[in-house]
Image 1 (tube, rainbow, N blue to C red):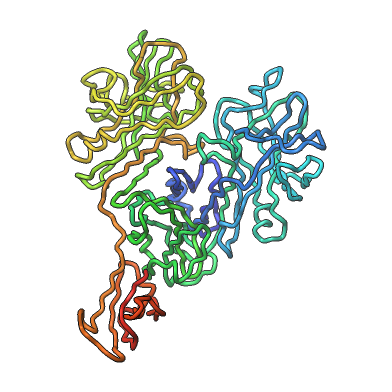
Image 2: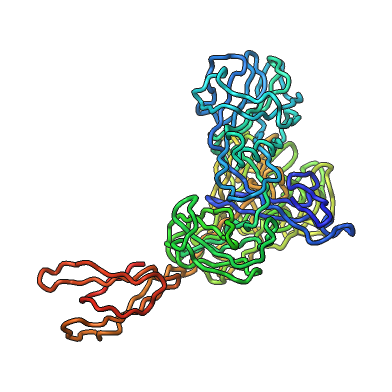
Length: 612
């Protein structure tokens, strides 16, 4: 929620948004991209300061299933199916139930909005006659009893008053279906109502009328499409962004600046914490650093272990942020994952027609076609900025991932190629078809600048192949472009992007794959993404201990004062002094120096151990 000092507000979920928060998944990571609408922000009526409530996405749900609403003794029907069912088949009323875990919301938050989301991936209840094109009004209700997949329909507790409704049409437009469930989420969080989740059902139950079949927790094509709950809340805590760059010894962290919007308390400090345990409680044992500058909203961790999974949290004053999970790469490596939105990268497609010389540009399209169709051949173009990867780095892996949302009609092999001519995305769209003169077409790399060879100029050496199967369902295609990324990093080839094309471009009707582009906003997690792994020489620095007295090799008798120093790039938890008995060689009881103590005389025996 974005709110100015007059109280004028625009919710994150509003159409024509003042504020948008895209939560995207990159590998095991979540990336949060917050944007304020420039027109709303610079409106003459706007009164500053402008405040933003943070939003957290709870995904996946803790459980989901669908039930036969008109069969009292039937239990959950989902099983291993990838899709829920909401609507009316030839013999059943189908109700979908979803439950969420709200434990990720920090204590003391004030919820302003909560939106339940189910992803419609063009799957629906097929009846006779066909339900395609029909309209459905779907209600969200609060569940009032605990339930599981073994619960019979007659035992489901459902509040008869709908929280909200959504009217949707069965069509081929994949999108999120959303319901406002703020009242229920607020009561769950406050503990005034038990959190048993939600149930979704057709407002009017009529057999054979059909309905949508949104994605369930069993869906595997992309986990960011699983049922979710977006909660916007007000708190003194900051929002910790999912890191874009991970090093073997830690993540590059960034977060929003403290505002004290809930309590009005003045800023004191940011405490950055890390743990190997999910949902950890920040403490002195998890503390990485303390920052006292309110504008310093970034930190590079250098003390974690390679190949480890860790969780980070930033505590502003005493208010905790959301926790983010990272999986660090191997020792000496770094991983950068980019999934930019509109204007932050380039992608488009170019098309040849054998019956007309066309000037069409598709730079602003939300999707692109690669392959062939009646009278046409299409190729995809992509480009990402990699300037922050050090020149000369060794690239060990570079993968361009594209999500195809339609069913692939035929078995095909595709390859990526390094583009060798600069080009522009352009602003054209396919409906209505646009000749903008400002971006790539089959004939031009940019307005008025021709390709040397029609259809784009690209290196003859291809990257890794992607092979499809006939009738392949929606999924990610991962193109290996490691060799060309290495040439970009070494400076032997300019980074002008990647072209994707069929090996066999013989014209065949309907022989296309459709990928989402960086303009796709209905589910931003499905935009094209590039992940690059490179050597950066990062290593976790081990702690060191030195004994200054007695001197090395000195012969001592009786009680001796031992002076030791310990240091680390993070901190020293403790130093342990232990006695080794000369008679039996055994390691006996020890004394410990407390955390952060670096010098301490002790009257004790011989020998020293250190523990980080």
